Length: 254
Image 1 (cartoon, rainbow, N blue to C red):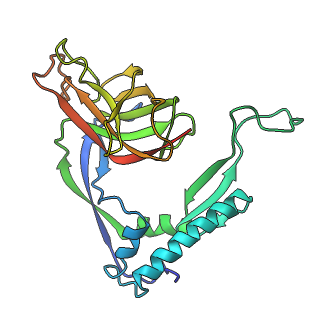
Image 2 (image 1 turned 90 degrees about the vertical axis):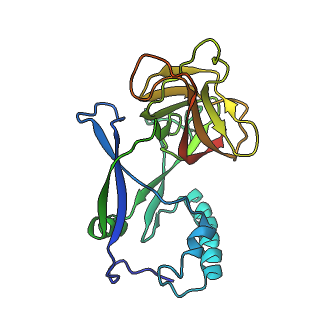
């Protein structure tokens, strides 16, 4: 099955809300954030086939996507560049060298480089309309998380390495009665959330934390901030606790 991005006369609408600016160096008070639908895995993607008038049986789509992803794993690892209607993928070798090395430096590994395809970028540019839906009124937001070891955004967390979290209303504070309850937690949805022991930077728009060594490799974790600070920037602590949950999950890796 091939999807032709050029023939579908469809205009997609994405709802977006204003959120307080969280990116470093922001010059205006707000960013614009898309209001995303729930996350889809391969099964979820296949189940949407009928909604988008794809005539191929959803089971065939799911089996094809699964097999295709497995094949891409092996091809990328063998050095191939993969070009699809949706993304382009290749191996990148990080670091700087003298020119006489015979192996990669300790701790340096090949990395996957993923880029949206030109066809997908053009499709989104031409077919997506944004509808503005006012200011996000939530008391805090986890907007993004950067794994500093790999540079990946909203994808992975490297155990025992630095994770940078950006958003607003993030600062972890508490009075003496609530000190043990607050913090940044990694929640797999099944076991007791794991609290990070080290918050190197603790600011309203930025947290820099060390990923706990007790996380399980391969498990997916949502982020949860529990704090008594005010999301409105007031120096006074709230009477009760406030929780912020990430809309994305991060896969733990060694």
